[in-house]
Each structure stands twice: as structure tokens, then as C-alpha cells.
Length: 531
Image (cartoon, rainbow, N blue to C red; front, top):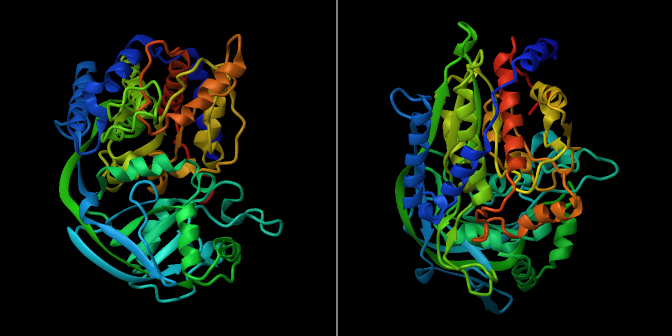
């Protein structure tokens, strides 16, 4: 905390020499191209990914940024690709004198977490509560029970805080223990044969179509990372309820038991039997990074990173004609907002940065595989192109404001480091309020690439859009922003030339201003509390 006054001391200088403006013209042009059908949704391991990487590195080169990796703008990231061959796979549940075979896609999705083309399963099913082992929270859903070779049925999210423990698992904010990624990781550590998560829209913070779209296609994990369980996936709540009943239990009663500290894994009178056939391959994807060298002889050895993920869901099977009325069912998940907008903003910010270098160096980093579980940023943190010990901060952009300019800006989780304090000061200097914090019910803090830097010990945050819209009908603008939830991870996330991009430019400008302030400050941001 002692470093904060020194950090804020850079603001008078920042105000005297305001950073160059981020231009709407380049931002719009980049956005339109990156979201075009030509790039086929920028899917990991697909042709659109190759076109996207080539475009990004060409633009960085044209702007005059230096390659971040020797003579190359590319950082290779080795991935393991796994696609469930549904025609050769079947999963059934036997018990209670019945055999249930949920339909892939509409009722269940699953795949392999290991590099095996063919697997067979005959595993007892165990309800494992929320699937959490957290010594710091004095919580253990496993209680030392041997779960090797068993299929775990697990609830999404985490136990709710109580009046006696209002800060349990970070209180109203979802902690990492509530994320599906953690539950898959913990199931593998327990030696389970598989894990199925029980989906509800409330607990996952998104609907079943989002889950289905993520599992209909090829999925990826780091080739050099830890393996998952042999089988992993999700089931709808209706299917979970029926399976639990078939196994002699009641789902609501099990949920209630899972809220208690003394919960122990509960075997169901149920076995999973089936086969899983997978197409397995290794594929090389790339992070793309360019650097604007710093102007200060000493500080230029340190770096401020601006990041955004370039990948989306790519090109898959065309949805049914009635799934998206009025929308061409072309099977292309363009990802205009998520996250062509963030990439376009970074390119426009890089164009501004090259005009007026700051004291510290600045890196513009476009990461791969975010939609697959932050894979590109995890790979960067494991093998950074700039030493983490000399990385001042990461500012991440993901899904920008396409609606209208606002009176405020979003700084979620700003209280976790002095980077947030500097953000508050920059907002004030820019004439912006900071949007009031809201409970993070969906675990947003753990769902964007800044979190990979936080885990690696680098202060980082994702800059959000404002919510106090400027215009004659703010309510209509709020409704337009809220309606994006229906397009999230759907083929309807497409670029509209009629979009008012002033809010997007505003968000990019604030992020750039904050980065410039960090790059100009005598000291670096620091964490305030344990991460």
C-alpha cells in the first residue's frame, strides 16, 4: 500500500500530456473484418484461426510494433484437440430396474479429458455435492472417500453463504471453487473415471444452449497441461433429477445435504455403462504479441500488457431454422462482441501507442483458446515473452460496449490491487464515474484472461463497459445491452454496421489511458490481499 501515493503521483504528468486518442475509424474497420464470415468464427484449430493470426501479426507489423518473440509476433501454443464421435459413442445409466440413455446435445454432453481414441466405462455413480475441497474454507465434499474409478455427479456453483458465515467462498461473489473448470480439475485429482455437472441457468449463469454449443464441436486443452478425467460433461437438470430418482434418491434432498459441512459423497444405485470414441489430434495455435518499446532508460525494461482473446467458437453445424428467427443459419459463430470487439480495440490502441511511447514498454497481446478455458493466457503465464517479475500489469478487454457512450466505466474487482485505485483516479481525470460494483454471481473474475496473470502474481483486471448510458432513451439502451445475453455464444453475435461505437471507443480509450498511467508511474501496482 505504501507504493500507492507514488503510483498516483504519475497522474499530474498524465493529465498534462494526455495519451493520443483511440480512433473510431480503425477500430470499426478491424471489428468488421474480424467478425466477417470470411474468418469463419475464428474457431480454435480451424481455418479461420489461421486467417485471424495472420491478420493480427500483419497489422502489428504495419503499425510498427516490435515482435515480442525474437523476430516473430507469434508464440506457439500446443493444444490437444478432442472431438466426441457421437455416432460411435453411447452412455447409459443402469439401476432401479431401468436403463436410461440421455440424448447427446439436448439432454447430455460429454467428451474425453484424456488423449484416448476409444474408451469403455462401467462405473458406479456417486453424488459428490459441489465437488469442492478447500482447506482454507474448512470445506471438503470428499471426506477421504475413495472415488477412483467412479463417476461423480456434481452441482455447479458453490454452497450459499449463511448468516453465520456471510463470507463463505467469497460471500455473494462466486469463487473459483464454483467454476466448472475447477470441478473438472478436482475430479481428476480424485482419480474419478468421470464427472457430470448438473446444469441450471441460475447456477451456471448461462443457458443450456451455451453448454451445448461448447460441446458439439471439438474441444481443446493444453497439450502439456494436466489431463482431465476419462469422461467429463454436463447433464440438464431434468435428466439429473430423473437419474437421481432412478438411483433411489431425490435431487432436492441431495442439494440440501450438499449445503452442509458434514456432507459426504452419496453412492447412487446407478452405474454408468458405455463407450466413448474420440477424434484426437495435437494442433499448434498461436498467441500474437507486439511491443511498443518504452522511452525511459530504466523503466523500459518493464512492461504493461494489454490483452484480448482472438478466438471464438468457429464454424459448426448450422442451427435449426427456428432457433434464431430472422438469422441466416450459416453455422458461423462470428463472435463480433465476444471478442472481435476486444481485438479491434487493442489494434486501435496500438495505433495510438506507437505515436507516443510511455516510460515502460507496452505489449499488445492477442491470446488464443480463451473459449476453451483461458488456454492461451495460461500458456503465456507459464512461458512469458517478458519476465513476469518485470510485468507491471495486465489490462484485459473482452466483449466491449457496442450500444452507446456512458457516463461511467466498469472496473470490476478493482479492490484487489492498487491497479484499481489508479483506475479510479484515471476515471476521475477522464470525467467518468466508476460503475457501482455488483455481486459476481457468474464468476466473471475467473472467466477472462486477466485471471491467468493474477494467478501468476501480476496485478490484472478486465475493464468493463459502463451502464449509465447517454442518450434520449437510456432505458431502451439498457434493454439493448441486456438483449445481448440472447446472442452470447450464438450465431447471432454478428457485427452490425449501424452500431454506435462511441461507447466502444470510450472503453478502449479508458483502458489505454490507464495503461499509459501505469507505464508512466515511478512504481508498479501491487496486490492488496491474498488472491
